[in-house]
Image (cartoon, rainbow, N blue to C red):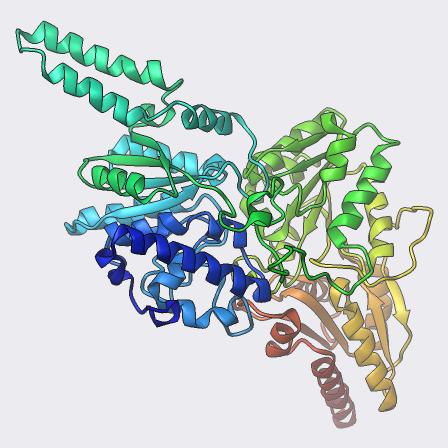
Amino acid sequence: MELTEISSPSFIKKLEKEQMAGLAEEIRKFLIEKLSVTGGHIGPNLGVVELTIALHRHFDSPTDKIIWDVGHQAYVHKILTGRAVDFDSLRQYKGLCGFPKRIESDHDVWETGHSSTSLSAAMGMAAARDIKGDSNYVIPVIGDGALTGGMALEALNHIGHAKTNMIVILNDNEMSIAPNVGALHAVLGKLRTAGKYNSAKDELEYILKKIPAVGGKLATAAERVKDSLKYLLVSGVFFEELGFTYLGPIDGHDFNDLERNIQYAKKMDGPVLLHVITKKGKGYSPAEDDKIGTWHGTGPYKIETGDFVKSSSVAPSWSGLVAGTVQKIAREDRRIVAITPAMPVGSKLESFAAEFPDRFFDVGIAEQHATTMAAGLATQGMKPFLAIYSTFMQRAYDQMLHDISRQNLNVFIGIDRAGLVGADGETHQGVFDIAFLRHMPNLVIMMPKDENEGQHMVKTALDYDEGPIVMRYPRGNGLGVTMDETLRPIPIGSWEVLREGHDGVILTFGTTIPMALEAANILFTKGIHVKVINARFIKPLDTAMLDMIFATGMPVITVEEAVLAGGFGSAVLEYAHDTLQTIVPIRRMGIPDQFIEHGNVDELLAEIGMTAGHLVENMESFIKMQEVEREQV
Protein backbone atom coordinates (compact mmCIF):
# COMPACT_ATOMS: atom_id res chain seq x y z
CA MET A 1 0.00 0.00 0.00
CA GLU A 2 1.28 3.46 -0.92
CA LEU A 3 1.39 5.94 1.95
CA THR A 4 -0.97 8.24 0.06
CA GLU A 5 -3.52 5.40 -0.09
CA ILE A 6 -3.75 5.02 3.68
CA SER A 7 -7.14 6.01 5.06
CA SER A 8 -7.01 4.43 8.52
CA PRO A 9 -4.31 3.00 10.81
CA SER A 10 -6.20 -0.29 11.20
CA PHE A 11 -4.08 -1.96 8.49
CA ILE A 12 -1.04 -1.88 10.80
CA LYS A 13 -2.55 -4.54 13.06
CA LYS A 14 -2.23 -7.09 10.24
CA LEU A 15 1.42 -6.42 9.39
CA GLU A 16 4.29 -8.76 10.11
CA LYS A 17 7.34 -7.37 11.88
CA GLU A 18 9.31 -7.22 8.62
CA GLN A 19 6.50 -5.27 6.99
CA MET A 20 6.45 -2.84 9.92
CA ALA A 21 10.16 -2.21 9.46
CA GLY A 22 9.54 -1.58 5.76
CA LEU A 23 6.73 0.82 6.60
CA ALA A 24 9.02 2.73 8.96
CA GLU A 25 11.67 3.05 6.26
CA GLU A 26 9.09 4.22 3.72
CA ILE A 27 7.73 6.86 6.12
CA ARG A 28 11.22 8.22 6.83
CA LYS A 29 11.96 8.51 3.12
CA PHE A 30 8.61 10.23 2.56
CA LEU A 31 9.20 12.76 5.35
CA ILE A 32 12.74 13.59 4.25
CA GLU A 33 11.56 14.23 0.68
CA LYS A 34 8.42 16.21 1.50
CA LEU A 35 9.93 18.39 4.23
CA SER A 36 12.91 19.27 2.03
CA VAL A 37 10.38 21.30 0.01
CA THR A 38 7.96 22.63 2.64
CA GLY A 39 10.19 22.73 5.71
CA GLY A 40 8.85 21.58 9.04
CA HIS A 41 9.71 19.66 12.19
CA ILE A 42 11.92 17.02 10.64
CA GLY A 43 14.01 15.94 13.66
CA PRO A 44 11.17 15.17 16.10
CA ASN A 45 9.19 13.19 13.52
CA LEU A 46 12.04 11.02 12.29
CA GLY A 47 12.57 10.05 15.92
CA VAL A 48 9.07 8.70 16.57
CA VAL A 49 8.38 6.60 13.48
CA GLU A 50 8.52 3.17 15.15
CA LEU A 51 6.85 4.48 18.30
CA THR A 52 3.91 5.92 16.35
CA ILE A 53 3.47 2.73 14.33
CA ALA A 54 3.53 0.67 17.54
CA LEU A 55 0.95 2.90 19.22
CA HIS A 56 -1.46 2.61 16.31
CA ARG A 57 -0.86 -1.15 16.17
CA HIS A 58 -1.76 -1.76 19.81
CA PHE A 59 -4.41 0.88 20.39
CA ASP A 60 -7.62 1.69 18.55
CA SER A 61 -7.55 5.38 17.64
CA PRO A 62 -9.68 7.45 17.94
CA THR A 63 -11.59 5.39 20.54
CA ASP A 64 -8.32 5.15 22.43
CA LYS A 65 -7.00 8.69 22.90
CA ILE A 66 -3.44 9.26 21.68
CA ILE A 67 -2.47 12.77 22.83
CA TRP A 68 0.65 14.38 21.40
CA ASP A 69 2.41 16.89 23.64
CA VAL A 70 3.53 20.00 21.69
CA GLY A 71 2.33 18.24 18.55
CA HIS A 72 5.35 18.92 16.37
CA GLN A 73 6.05 15.16 16.28
CA ALA A 74 2.61 14.17 14.94
CA TYR A 75 3.50 14.02 11.22
CA VAL A 76 3.82 10.20 11.32
CA HIS A 77 0.47 10.04 13.10
CA LYS A 78 -1.00 12.18 10.32
CA ILE A 79 0.39 9.85 7.64
CA LEU A 80 -1.03 6.76 9.37
CA THR A 81 -4.45 8.39 9.76
CA GLY A 82 -4.93 9.17 6.09
CA ARG A 83 -3.30 12.53 5.45
CA ALA A 84 -0.15 11.62 3.50
CA VAL A 85 -1.90 12.74 0.33
CA ASP A 86 -1.96 16.31 1.71
CA PHE A 87 1.70 16.61 2.68
CA ASP A 88 2.64 18.79 -0.27
CA SER A 89 0.54 21.48 1.44
CA LEU A 90 2.06 21.01 4.91
CA ARG A 91 2.19 24.35 6.77
CA GLN A 92 1.13 26.14 3.58
CA TYR A 93 -1.80 28.55 3.23
CA LYS A 94 -5.07 26.58 3.50
CA GLY A 95 -3.03 23.37 3.67
CA LEU A 96 -2.23 20.65 6.20
CA CYS A 97 -1.47 22.00 9.67
CA GLY A 98 1.94 21.29 11.17
CA PHE A 99 0.34 20.43 14.51
CA PRO A 100 -2.62 18.21 15.51
CA LYS A 101 -5.87 19.77 14.32
CA ARG A 102 -9.23 18.44 15.46
CA ILE A 103 -11.09 19.58 12.34
CA GLU A 104 -8.56 17.71 10.18
CA SER A 105 -9.22 14.27 11.65
CA ASP A 106 -11.09 12.45 14.41
CA HIS A 107 -7.73 10.94 15.31
CA ASP A 108 -6.46 14.36 16.43
CA VAL A 109 -8.12 14.35 19.84
CA TRP A 110 -6.13 17.27 21.26
CA GLU A 111 -4.79 20.45 19.64
CA THR A 112 -1.55 21.92 20.83
CA GLY A 113 1.54 23.83 19.78
CA HIS A 114 2.86 24.57 23.26
CA SER A 115 4.59 22.01 25.46
CA SER A 116 3.60 20.30 28.70
CA THR A 117 -0.19 20.25 28.13
CA SER A 118 -0.73 16.58 27.28
CA LEU A 119 -0.83 15.12 30.78
CA SER A 120 -3.44 17.58 32.06
CA ALA A 121 -5.56 17.02 28.95
CA ALA A 122 -5.16 13.27 29.38
CA MET A 123 -6.30 13.50 33.00
CA GLY A 124 -9.40 15.34 31.85
CA MET A 125 -10.16 12.74 29.18
CA ALA A 126 -9.54 9.88 31.59
CA ALA A 127 -11.80 11.46 34.21
CA ALA A 128 -14.56 11.86 31.61
CA ARG A 129 -14.09 8.22 30.57
CA ASP A 130 -14.44 7.03 34.16
CA ILE A 131 -17.50 9.19 34.86
CA LYS A 132 -19.21 7.80 31.74
CA GLY A 133 -18.19 4.23 32.55
CA ASP A 134 -16.19 3.74 29.36
CA SER A 135 -13.10 1.55 29.10
CA ASN A 136 -10.91 3.15 26.43
CA TYR A 137 -7.20 3.78 26.90
CA VAL A 138 -5.75 7.27 27.28
CA ILE A 139 -2.17 7.58 26.02
CA PRO A 140 -0.37 10.94 26.31
CA VAL A 141 3.01 11.11 24.54
CA ILE A 142 5.31 13.65 26.19
CA GLY A 143 8.96 14.46 25.56
CA ASP A 144 11.65 14.66 28.20
CA GLY A 145 12.02 18.38 27.54
CA ALA A 146 8.31 19.05 27.98
CA LEU A 147 8.38 17.13 31.25
CA THR A 148 10.28 20.03 32.83
CA GLY A 149 7.25 22.28 32.40
CA GLY A 150 5.53 22.99 35.70
CA MET A 151 2.14 22.09 34.26
CA ALA A 152 3.37 18.60 33.37
CA LEU A 153 4.72 18.06 36.88
CA GLU A 154 1.43 19.27 38.38
CA ALA A 155 -0.42 16.75 36.23
CA LEU A 156 1.95 13.90 37.13
CA ASN A 157 1.31 14.62 40.78
CA HIS A 158 -2.47 14.54 40.30
CA ILE A 159 -2.52 11.44 38.09
CA GLY A 160 -0.35 9.49 40.52
CA HIS A 161 -2.37 10.59 43.52
CA ALA A 162 -5.68 9.68 41.86
CA LYS A 163 -4.26 6.35 40.59
CA THR A 164 -5.95 7.05 37.26
CA ASN A 165 -5.72 4.38 34.59
CA MET A 166 -3.46 5.88 31.96
CA ILE A 167 -0.43 4.90 29.89
CA VAL A 168 2.05 7.77 29.67
CA ILE A 169 4.68 7.51 26.94
CA LEU A 170 7.82 9.42 27.88
CA ASN A 171 9.55 9.99 24.54
CA ASP A 172 13.11 10.55 25.72
CA ASN A 173 15.43 11.79 22.96
CA GLU A 174 17.58 13.86 25.35
CA MET A 175 16.50 17.07 23.56
CA SER A 176 13.50 19.34 23.27
CA ILE A 177 14.23 22.16 20.84
CA ALA A 178 17.69 22.68 22.29
CA PRO A 179 19.64 20.31 24.54
CA ASN A 180 17.74 19.76 27.77
CA VAL A 181 18.88 21.18 31.07
CA GLY A 182 18.05 20.67 34.74
CA ALA A 183 18.00 18.10 37.50
CA LEU A 184 15.12 16.12 35.97
CA HIS A 185 17.20 15.69 32.83
CA ALA A 186 19.91 14.19 35.04
CA VAL A 187 17.39 11.81 36.64
CA LEU A 188 16.36 10.58 33.20
CA GLY A 189 20.02 10.16 32.32
CA LYS A 190 20.42 7.78 35.25
CA LEU A 191 17.33 5.88 34.18
CA ARG A 192 18.69 5.48 30.65
CA THR A 193 21.80 3.75 31.97
CA ALA A 194 20.12 1.77 34.74
CA GLY A 195 19.21 -1.24 32.65
CA LYS A 196 15.83 -2.90 32.34
CA TYR A 197 14.32 -1.95 35.65
CA ASN A 198 10.96 -3.62 35.09
CA SER A 199 12.56 -6.84 33.83
CA ALA A 200 14.81 -7.12 36.85
CA LYS A 201 11.89 -6.37 39.16
CA ASP A 202 9.79 -9.07 37.48
CA GLU A 203 12.56 -11.62 37.91
CA LEU A 204 12.79 -10.90 41.64
CA GLU A 205 9.01 -11.08 41.97
CA TYR A 206 9.07 -14.49 40.24
CA ILE A 207 11.71 -15.75 42.69
CA LEU A 208 9.77 -14.46 45.68
CA LYS A 209 6.65 -16.28 44.56
CA LYS A 210 8.62 -19.56 44.64
CA ILE A 211 9.18 -19.16 48.38
CA PRO A 212 6.71 -21.36 50.28
CA ALA A 213 4.13 -19.37 52.25
CA VAL A 214 5.18 -19.95 55.84
CA GLY A 215 3.43 -17.04 57.43
CA GLY A 216 2.80 -13.33 57.22
CA LYS A 217 6.21 -12.30 58.47
CA LEU A 218 8.06 -13.91 55.58
CA ALA A 219 5.59 -12.52 53.07
CA THR A 220 5.99 -9.03 54.49
CA ALA A 221 9.76 -9.34 54.47
CA ALA A 222 9.68 -10.55 50.89
CA GLU A 223 7.66 -7.50 49.85
CA ARG A 224 10.17 -5.24 51.57
CA VAL A 225 13.01 -6.89 49.69
CA LYS A 226 11.11 -6.46 46.44
CA ASP A 227 10.44 -2.77 47.12
CA SER A 228 14.05 -2.17 48.03
CA LEU A 229 15.03 -3.20 44.51
CA LYS A 230 13.69 0.15 43.35
CA TYR A 231 16.33 1.95 45.35
CA LEU A 232 19.02 -0.50 44.27
CA LEU A 233 18.34 -0.11 40.55
CA VAL A 234 17.09 3.43 40.10
CA SER A 235 18.33 6.35 42.13
CA GLY A 236 15.34 8.31 43.34
CA VAL A 237 12.67 6.15 41.63
CA PHE A 238 11.11 9.45 40.67
CA PHE A 239 8.07 8.16 38.81
CA GLU A 240 7.22 5.28 41.13
CA GLU A 241 7.30 7.61 44.10
CA LEU A 242 4.73 9.74 42.25
CA GLY A 243 2.45 6.72 41.99
CA PHE A 244 3.31 5.41 38.51
CA THR A 245 4.42 1.96 37.49
CA TYR A 246 7.65 2.60 35.62
CA LEU A 247 8.55 0.44 32.60
CA GLY A 248 11.84 0.98 30.89
CA PRO A 249 14.04 2.13 29.50
CA ILE A 250 12.63 0.85 26.20
CA ASP A 251 14.32 0.99 22.80
CA GLY A 252 11.99 3.24 20.82
CA HIS A 253 13.26 1.89 17.51
CA ASP A 254 12.82 -1.82 18.36
CA PHE A 255 9.32 -3.06 17.55
CA ASN A 256 9.74 -6.14 19.77
CA ASP A 257 10.73 -4.08 22.79
CA LEU A 258 7.93 -1.59 22.18
CA GLU A 259 5.31 -4.30 21.67
CA ARG A 260 6.30 -6.27 24.75
CA ASN A 261 6.10 -3.26 27.05
CA ILE A 262 2.92 -1.79 25.55
CA GLN A 263 1.15 -5.11 25.99
CA TYR A 264 2.40 -5.31 29.55
CA ALA A 265 1.21 -1.77 30.29
CA LYS A 266 -2.27 -2.48 28.92
CA LYS A 267 -2.75 -5.22 31.51
CA MET A 268 -1.90 -3.04 34.50
CA ASP A 269 -4.16 -0.97 36.72
CA GLY A 270 -3.35 2.61 37.62
CA PRO A 271 -1.00 4.97 35.82
CA VAL A 272 1.91 3.44 33.91
CA LEU A 273 4.88 5.30 32.46
CA LEU A 274 6.74 3.81 29.51
CA HIS A 275 10.19 5.36 29.27
CA VAL A 276 10.98 5.13 25.55
CA ILE A 277 14.44 6.09 24.29
CA THR A 278 14.44 7.49 20.75
CA LYS A 279 16.93 9.22 18.48
CA LYS A 280 15.85 12.61 17.21
CA GLY A 281 16.39 12.80 13.44
CA LYS A 282 16.88 9.04 13.09
CA GLY A 283 17.43 7.90 9.52
CA TYR A 284 18.81 11.17 8.17
CA SER A 285 22.39 11.82 9.19
CA PRO A 286 22.36 15.65 9.17
CA ALA A 287 19.42 15.58 11.60
CA GLU A 288 20.82 12.68 13.63
CA ASP A 289 24.15 14.45 14.14
CA ASP A 290 22.50 17.71 15.25
CA LYS A 291 23.54 18.55 18.81
CA ILE A 292 22.02 22.01 19.27
CA GLY A 293 18.52 21.77 17.80
CA THR A 294 19.14 23.18 14.31
CA TRP A 295 17.13 20.31 12.78
CA HIS A 296 14.24 20.56 15.23
CA GLY A 297 12.28 22.66 12.76
CA THR A 298 13.64 23.88 9.46
CA GLY A 299 12.83 25.59 6.22
CA PRO A 300 13.52 23.83 2.91
CA TYR A 301 16.82 21.96 2.56
CA LYS A 302 18.86 19.94 0.05
CA ILE A 303 18.39 16.25 0.78
CA GLU A 304 21.81 15.14 -0.51
CA THR A 305 23.89 17.56 1.55
CA GLY A 306 21.58 18.73 4.33
CA ASP A 307 22.31 22.33 3.37
CA PHE A 308 19.45 24.71 4.11
CA VAL A 309 17.98 26.80 1.33
CA LYS A 310 19.13 30.21 2.46
CA SER A 311 17.04 33.35 2.49
CA SER A 312 18.10 35.91 -0.11
CA SER A 313 18.07 38.63 2.56
CA VAL A 314 21.45 40.03 3.57
CA ALA A 315 19.93 41.86 6.54
CA PRO A 316 20.54 40.50 10.04
CA SER A 317 17.91 38.37 11.70
CA TRP A 318 15.91 40.22 14.31
CA SER A 319 16.75 37.66 16.99
CA GLY A 320 20.45 37.91 16.14
CA LEU A 321 20.40 41.70 16.10
CA VAL A 322 18.80 41.96 19.55
CA ALA A 323 20.93 39.24 21.15
CA GLY A 324 24.10 40.66 19.58
CA THR A 325 23.36 44.19 20.80
CA VAL A 326 22.66 42.92 24.32
CA GLN A 327 25.95 41.03 24.21
CA LYS A 328 27.82 44.13 23.03
CA ILE A 329 26.45 46.27 25.87
CA ALA A 330 27.00 43.46 28.40
CA ARG A 331 30.75 43.79 27.85
CA GLU A 332 30.54 47.19 29.52
CA ASP A 333 27.81 46.43 32.06
CA ARG A 334 28.25 43.42 34.32
CA ARG A 335 24.71 43.78 35.61
CA ILE A 336 23.36 42.37 32.35
CA VAL A 337 22.37 38.70 32.33
CA ALA A 338 20.37 36.74 29.75
CA ILE A 339 17.62 34.22 30.43
CA THR A 340 15.76 31.96 28.00
CA PRO A 341 13.14 29.24 28.53
CA ALA A 342 14.74 26.53 26.35
CA MET A 343 15.24 28.75 23.29
CA PRO A 344 18.96 29.63 23.14
CA VAL A 345 19.16 28.75 19.44
CA GLY A 346 15.92 30.41 18.35
CA SER A 347 16.73 33.54 20.36
CA LYS A 348 20.31 33.56 19.00
CA LEU A 349 21.87 33.60 22.48
CA GLU A 350 24.55 30.96 21.83
CA SER A 351 27.25 33.60 21.43
CA PHE A 352 26.20 35.41 24.62
CA ALA A 353 26.28 32.07 26.48
CA ALA A 354 29.78 31.30 25.17
CA GLU A 355 31.19 34.70 26.15
CA PHE A 356 29.36 35.03 29.47
CA PRO A 357 28.61 31.50 30.71
CA ASP A 358 28.11 32.68 34.29
CA ARG A 359 25.61 35.32 33.17
CA PHE A 360 23.48 33.12 30.92
CA PHE A 361 20.60 30.93 32.08
CA ASP A 362 18.67 28.42 30.00
CA VAL A 363 16.02 27.28 32.46
CA GLY A 364 14.33 24.71 30.21
CA ILE A 365 10.69 24.77 29.19
CA ALA A 366 9.66 26.83 32.19
CA GLU A 367 8.42 30.25 31.14
CA GLN A 368 6.87 31.07 34.50
CA HIS A 369 10.08 30.26 36.33
CA ALA A 370 12.17 32.22 33.82
CA THR A 371 10.02 35.33 34.32
CA THR A 372 10.05 35.28 38.11
CA MET A 373 13.75 34.40 38.15
CA ALA A 374 14.33 37.57 36.11
CA ALA A 375 12.36 39.46 38.77
CA GLY A 376 14.53 37.97 41.50
CA LEU A 377 17.69 38.99 39.69
CA ALA A 378 16.37 42.52 39.30
CA THR A 379 15.75 42.87 43.05
CA GLN A 380 19.48 42.39 43.53
CA GLY A 381 20.54 45.15 41.17
CA MET A 382 21.09 42.99 38.10
CA LYS A 383 19.71 43.93 34.66
CA PRO A 384 18.12 40.73 33.29
CA PHE A 385 17.29 40.35 29.60
CA LEU A 386 14.51 37.79 29.23
CA ALA A 387 14.34 36.54 25.63
CA ILE A 388 10.97 34.91 25.07
CA TYR A 389 8.68 34.31 22.10
CA SER A 390 5.39 36.21 22.13
CA THR A 391 3.42 32.97 22.02
CA PHE A 392 5.30 31.66 25.08
CA MET A 393 5.02 34.93 27.01
CA GLN A 394 1.31 34.09 27.25
CA ARG A 395 2.24 31.32 29.65
CA ALA A 396 3.86 33.71 32.12
CA TYR A 397 1.11 36.32 32.36
CA ASP A 398 0.75 36.19 36.13
CA GLN A 399 4.49 36.30 36.72
CA MET A 400 4.74 39.32 34.45
CA LEU A 401 1.91 41.08 36.27
CA HIS A 402 2.43 39.95 39.86
CA ASP A 403 6.20 39.59 40.09
CA ILE A 404 7.68 42.08 37.61
CA SER A 405 5.19 44.87 36.92
CA ARG A 406 3.70 45.09 40.41
CA GLN A 407 7.15 45.38 41.96
CA ASN A 408 8.26 47.78 39.19
CA LEU A 409 11.46 45.83 38.61
CA ASN A 410 14.11 46.67 36.02
CA VAL A 411 13.65 43.73 33.69
CA PHE A 412 14.14 43.96 29.91
CA ILE A 413 11.80 41.56 28.11
CA GLY A 414 12.61 40.86 24.47
CA ILE A 415 9.41 39.55 22.89
CA ASP A 416 10.58 37.63 19.85
CA ARG A 417 8.32 36.50 16.98
CA ALA A 418 5.90 39.39 17.62
CA GLY A 419 3.25 39.58 14.94
CA LEU A 420 2.27 36.89 12.44
CA VAL A 421 4.78 34.06 12.17
CA GLY A 422 3.30 32.16 9.24
CA ALA A 423 3.80 28.42 8.93
CA ASP A 424 3.49 27.49 12.62
CA GLY A 425 -0.02 28.86 12.60
CA GLU A 426 -2.54 29.83 15.23
CA THR A 427 -0.72 28.37 18.24
CA HIS A 428 2.33 30.52 17.51
CA GLN A 429 1.03 33.78 16.03
CA GLY A 430 2.49 36.55 18.20
CA VAL A 431 -0.53 38.84 18.06
CA PHE A 432 -1.83 38.84 21.63
CA ASP A 433 1.03 40.27 23.69
CA ILE A 434 0.11 43.96 23.34
CA ALA A 435 -3.43 43.28 24.55
CA PHE A 436 -2.39 41.25 27.58
CA LEU A 437 0.55 43.46 28.55
CA ARG A 438 -0.71 46.96 27.81
CA HIS A 439 -2.98 47.14 30.85
CA MET A 440 -0.15 46.34 33.29
CA PRO A 441 0.95 49.37 35.34
CA ASN A 442 4.61 50.46 35.22
CA LEU A 443 5.26 48.75 31.89
CA VAL A 444 6.84 50.32 28.80
CA ILE A 445 6.14 48.63 25.45
CA MET A 446 7.96 49.53 22.23
CA MET A 447 8.60 48.16 18.74
CA PRO A 448 11.14 49.46 16.19
CA LYS A 449 10.50 50.25 12.54
CA ASP A 450 13.79 48.69 11.39
CA GLU A 451 16.93 47.02 12.72
CA ASN A 452 18.82 50.29 13.18
CA GLU A 453 16.10 51.66 15.41
CA GLY A 454 16.02 48.21 16.98
CA GLN A 455 19.60 48.39 18.21
CA HIS A 456 18.90 51.83 19.69
CA MET A 457 15.85 50.40 21.45
CA VAL A 458 18.01 47.71 23.03
CA LYS A 459 20.26 50.49 24.31
CA THR A 460 17.14 52.33 25.54
CA ALA A 461 15.91 49.25 27.40
CA LEU A 462 19.23 48.48 29.07
CA ASP A 463 19.70 52.10 30.13
CA TYR A 464 16.18 52.32 31.53
CA ASP A 465 16.12 52.03 35.31
CA GLU A 466 12.56 53.05 36.13
CA GLY A 467 10.83 49.68 35.82
CA PRO A 468 10.12 46.90 33.33
CA ILE A 469 10.43 47.53 29.60
CA VAL A 470 9.34 45.37 26.68
CA MET A 471 10.70 45.39 23.14
CA ARG A 472 8.72 43.51 20.50
CA TYR A 473 10.45 42.30 17.33
CA PRO A 474 9.27 40.06 14.49
CA ARG A 475 10.38 36.74 13.12
CA GLY A 476 12.83 36.76 10.23
CA ASN A 477 15.24 39.36 8.97
CA GLY A 478 15.44 43.14 9.10
CA LEU A 479 15.07 45.48 6.16
CA GLY A 480 18.76 45.86 5.35
CA VAL A 481 19.05 49.49 6.45
CA THR A 482 22.31 51.27 7.27
CA MET A 483 23.34 50.71 10.87
CA ASP A 484 24.65 53.48 13.12
CA GLU A 485 27.97 52.75 14.79
CA THR A 486 27.13 54.56 18.02
CA LEU A 487 24.16 53.40 20.10
CA ARG A 488 21.89 56.00 21.65
CA PRO A 489 18.79 55.82 23.81
CA ILE A 490 15.43 56.92 22.43
CA PRO A 491 13.29 59.17 24.65
CA ILE A 492 10.60 57.02 26.26
CA GLY A 493 7.17 57.61 24.76
CA SER A 494 8.40 59.58 21.75
CA TRP A 495 6.98 59.03 18.27
CA GLU A 496 8.51 59.94 14.91
CA VAL A 497 6.96 61.58 11.85
CA LEU A 498 8.07 59.63 8.78
CA ARG A 499 6.04 61.53 6.22
CA GLU A 500 4.13 64.81 6.40
CA GLY A 501 0.55 65.21 5.21
CA HIS A 502 -2.58 67.27 5.78
CA ASP A 503 -5.45 65.04 4.61
CA GLY A 504 -5.20 62.15 7.06
CA VAL A 505 -2.92 60.35 9.52
CA ILE A 506 -1.66 56.77 9.70
CA LEU A 507 -0.42 55.72 13.14
CA THR A 508 1.53 52.48 13.04
CA PHE A 509 4.72 50.75 14.17
CA GLY A 510 7.03 47.82 13.51
CA THR A 511 6.30 45.50 10.61
CA THR A 512 3.42 47.58 9.22
CA ILE A 513 5.52 50.72 8.65
CA PRO A 514 6.47 49.69 5.06
CA MET A 515 2.81 49.01 4.28
CA ALA A 516 1.81 52.43 5.59
CA LEU A 517 4.50 54.20 3.54
CA GLU A 518 3.47 52.27 0.41
CA ALA A 519 -0.16 53.26 0.98
CA ALA A 520 0.88 56.89 1.46
CA ASN A 521 2.74 56.83 -1.85
CA ILE A 522 -0.30 55.43 -3.66
CA LEU A 523 -2.55 58.02 -2.04
CA PHE A 524 -0.13 60.78 -3.07
CA THR A 525 -0.59 59.81 -6.73
CA LYS A 526 -4.32 60.36 -6.16
CA GLY A 527 -3.77 63.81 -4.71
CA ILE A 528 -4.23 62.71 -1.10
CA HIS A 529 -1.48 63.68 1.35
CA VAL A 530 -1.35 61.60 4.53
CA LYS A 531 0.95 61.89 7.50
CA VAL A 532 2.68 58.63 8.50
CA ILE A 533 3.82 58.34 12.09
CA ASN A 534 6.10 55.72 13.58
CA ALA A 535 4.24 55.14 16.86
CA ARG A 536 7.19 53.16 18.19
CA PHE A 537 6.06 53.43 21.81
CA ILE A 538 2.83 51.53 22.27
CA LYS A 539 2.92 52.39 25.95
CA PRO A 540 3.23 55.16 26.94
CA LEU A 541 1.62 56.92 23.99
CA ASP A 542 3.11 60.15 22.69
CA THR A 543 0.17 62.16 24.00
CA ALA A 544 1.68 65.51 22.98
CA MET A 545 1.76 64.39 19.35
CA LEU A 546 -1.70 62.88 19.63
CA ASP A 547 -3.09 66.17 20.92
CA MET A 548 -1.60 68.02 17.94
CA ILE A 549 -3.07 65.46 15.52
CA PHE A 550 -6.49 65.53 17.15
CA ALA A 551 -6.49 69.34 17.01
CA THR A 552 -6.29 69.25 13.21
CA GLY A 553 -9.45 67.15 12.90
CA MET A 554 -7.77 64.92 10.30
CA PRO A 555 -9.08 61.35 10.09
CA VAL A 556 -6.77 58.90 11.86
CA ILE A 557 -6.23 55.24 11.02
CA THR A 558 -4.27 53.05 13.43
CA VAL A 559 -2.62 49.97 11.94
CA GLU A 560 -1.18 47.07 13.94
CA GLU A 561 -0.17 43.48 13.25
CA ALA A 562 -1.80 42.47 16.51
CA VAL A 563 -5.30 41.85 17.82
CA LEU A 564 -7.56 44.87 17.76
CA ALA A 565 -9.26 44.01 21.05
CA GLY A 566 -7.23 45.80 23.69
CA GLY A 567 -4.46 46.71 21.27
CA PHE A 568 -2.70 49.90 20.20
CA GLY A 569 -5.74 51.28 18.39
CA SER A 570 -7.79 50.73 21.52
CA ALA A 571 -5.22 52.75 23.47
CA VAL A 572 -5.60 55.68 21.05
CA LEU A 573 -9.40 55.51 21.32
CA GLU A 574 -9.19 55.35 25.10
CA TYR A 575 -6.96 58.44 25.18
CA ALA A 576 -9.35 60.35 22.93
CA HIS A 577 -12.26 59.38 25.17
CA ASP A 578 -10.51 60.13 28.45
CA THR A 579 -9.41 63.58 27.25
CA LEU A 580 -12.88 64.40 25.90
CA GLN A 581 -11.62 64.49 22.31
CA THR A 582 -14.36 62.14 21.22
CA ILE A 583 -15.19 63.96 17.98
CA VAL A 584 -11.83 62.90 16.51
CA PRO A 585 -12.46 60.50 13.58
CA ILE A 586 -10.52 57.29 14.30
CA ARG A 587 -10.54 53.92 12.56
CA ARG A 588 -8.55 50.82 13.42
CA MET A 589 -6.93 48.16 11.26
CA GLY A 590 -5.51 45.02 12.79
CA ILE A 591 -6.14 41.36 13.56
CA PRO A 592 -9.89 40.70 13.90
CA ASP A 593 -11.45 38.69 16.71
CA GLN A 594 -10.37 35.31 15.38
CA PHE A 595 -7.42 32.93 15.42
CA ILE A 596 -5.20 33.21 12.36
CA GLU A 597 -4.17 29.88 10.88
CA HIS A 598 -0.96 28.90 9.12
CA GLY A 599 0.31 30.17 5.80
CA ASN A 600 2.56 32.73 4.18
CA VAL A 601 2.35 35.99 6.15
CA ASP A 602 1.50 38.07 3.07
CA GLU A 603 -1.35 35.69 2.21
CA LEU A 604 -2.66 35.85 5.75
CA LEU A 605 -2.53 39.66 5.81
CA ALA A 606 -4.39 39.81 2.51
CA GLU A 607 -7.08 37.48 3.85
CA ILE A 608 -7.82 39.74 6.82
CA GLY A 609 -7.63 42.99 4.87
CA MET A 610 -4.22 44.16 6.04
CA THR A 611 -2.43 45.31 2.86
CA ALA A 612 -1.41 48.66 1.40
CA GLY A 613 -4.35 48.39 -0.99
CA HIS A 614 -6.80 47.88 1.84
CA LEU A 615 -5.28 50.79 3.73
CA VAL A 616 -5.61 53.04 0.66
CA GLU A 617 -9.29 52.10 0.27
CA ASN A 618 -9.89 52.63 3.96
CA MET A 619 -8.27 56.06 4.02
CA GLU A 620 -10.01 57.20 0.82
CA SER A 621 -13.45 56.22 2.08
CA PHE A 622 -12.72 57.72 5.49
CA ILE A 623 -11.66 61.09 4.03
CA LYS A 624 -14.70 61.19 1.73
CA MET A 625 -16.99 60.37 4.63
CA GLN A 626 -15.49 63.23 6.63
CA GLU A 627 -15.95 65.63 3.70
CA VAL A 628 -19.60 64.65 3.37
CA GLU A 629 -20.19 65.15 7.08
CA ARG A 630 -18.56 68.61 6.99
CA GLU A 631 -20.74 69.61 4.03
CA GLN A 632 -23.85 68.50 5.86
CA VAL A 633 -22.88 70.60 8.85
